[in-house]
Amino acid sequence: MKKLSYLIGIFIFAGLLFGGVTFAQNQNLSKRQKHHLEQLRKKKERTMQREVSREYYTQLLKEKYFVFQGDYLVGQEGNSFILSPDINFMSVNGNNIILQFGFNGAIGWNGVGGITVRGTLQGYQLHAGKKKNNLSMSTNVNLIGPGLPPTITMNVSDDGTAELIVQPAGGGPIIVYGQIVSPKKADIFVGQSLF
Image (cartoon, rainbow, N blue to C red; front, side, top):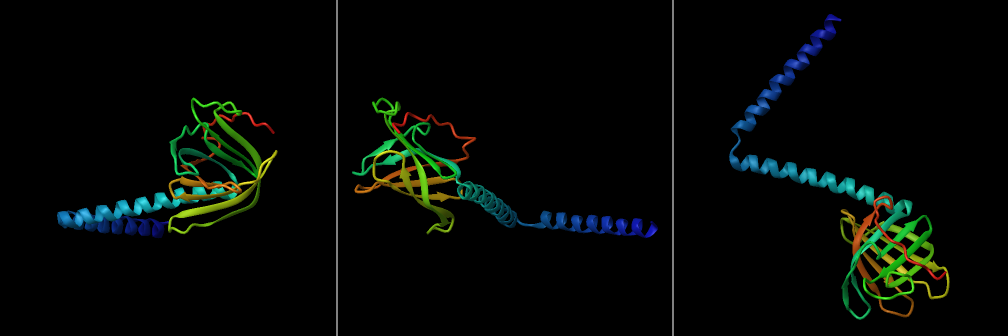
């Protein structure tokens, strides 16, 4: 018992000694050196946050349990539109997918001024993207009802921002920019589907 108390005392004394030396060294640093240390600390903190964020979004994509909410669309002829994320989304739950586009003020058969398509995923793949800090997802969609199935590709950054490319058969791509969220955090309105 005495030896344990003695060892604890030595460790506490050493901690105070080295802590005091480190504190004294920080007091002797120049303004430039302090600024450099602070920048290194912030950089390390940002790197750790990106790693945690990347792991979170990777898990959502691996589990096939996420919602992509679109903010901005570039159409087949290059026309661009600002979107409402609550009615422009792609919802993936397992192998089931809902892809919906809607425009405020427009009339559409889905009730939100556009189309709502339901289907199943086929050939779902997830891999590291071309850029250093992004993921890439690609899949084909088997539609419920008539129509040629589109191919879907999505590039996701560490912070959850994403680019969704919908390539319909026989047409130009539709590119939508937005954010990946957990279905629990998604605020979406699913319109009527004909099938």
